[in-house]
Image (cartoon, rainbow, N blue to C red; front, side, top):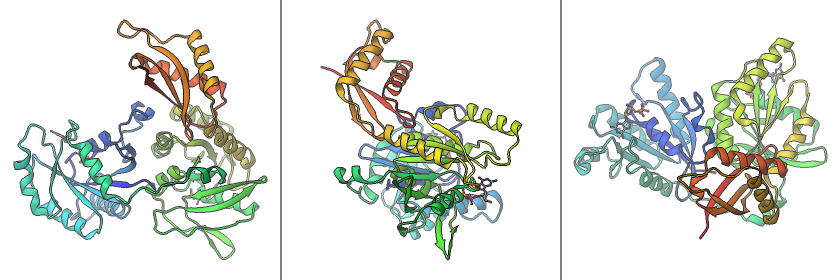
Length: 437
Ligand code: GDP
Ligand code: GDP
């Protein structure tokens, strides 16, 4: 499980600015897609020591009586429940407010580690600005500037130190285990119907009981003679003879399930179209580097023109998933599931592919012969050889000189070539560069 860091504070103290800074990584390909990240409150960050999940809670008005503020307060309390560490953000320019005091009291009761961060302190006398916040009795206030990135890295590392320690996996054991397949998507798209359809046909072997609400359950599945471990986020439980969804949707649970999986099945509702939330889950899968198969569910009962419409929606809004297979299925009528799992197998194989150095290097040399990297600041980058730096997602490390000058478009060109030659359908692929001596 990745540690979950939750950002809490009054509106306008700079939470979303901090969130954006924490989630901006080199690998966040989708970060630049217009419209997509605007309302993203859940993301993945890369700390110096390890990756983490970060949740931005909007604005916390703990005393709100009704309306949207009350709902935001409720959401914040839910997020606090799912937190490993809380960063409580206050505004160094406004100084301490009564609301800060109320929030602090709530947080002290939460039994979670809390870091108090005083934001907007760039160009100010840090010690003086933060002094008054000692009164909140949440330890030493840390001065930061989210907008300028000052103190943010240290804050994140301190937060990660307060989180439960990382579990160490034994690499050799992992290879023999069945692929882990997470079934994810927003509420009501048909996840539990899909899990039921899969389990209905096959014998259920075991259930793992979850410890907390944010844990997913793992279900052993045998299908077409192959074994899988389903990671179910819909909360399907055996009740008498039927399986029922008894838990509410949790984004943290969804993100944790994606982290644990080898392959994610992203379920989308064809009758509703593609929503921002669908795109956010998809973006998260890409950030996490997981293999992906998209299930466009509820395909039954759609008229031809509706089918055309949803296909156009997909082209427009999920174009960044062009490496993945899309399947039009009906979980309710058990249609399309065999093909869906053929793609799951293919995506898993691609995610775990072994890419030998001689082949990689030959493909690289051929690619360069076809299309050289552009000259940058008067120098043409020289690429010499490539080796595999990891799997799930496959990472190709290209060694050469002046690699700083490689343009994004060239990275995408190489990605396309490696993807095609090694048939890496269904998995994200990372191409990284290493400067030679
Ligand atoms: P949120 O409501 O807590 O998510 O706050 P936002 O991130 O939307 O920020 C509210 C305002 O504070 C925006 O105008 C930001 O540009 C500004 N802001 C955020 N961080 C800083 C900072 O470190 N320094 C300064 N001076 N302004 C900041
Ligand atoms: P979840 O919240 O993602 O687990 O969604 P559910 O599995 O609970 O499904 C939500 C609703 O969509 C239920 O009323 C299902 O019967 C319905 N549903 C699920 N799959 C299909 C499908 O393939 N076709 C149609 N027409 N309805 C479906």
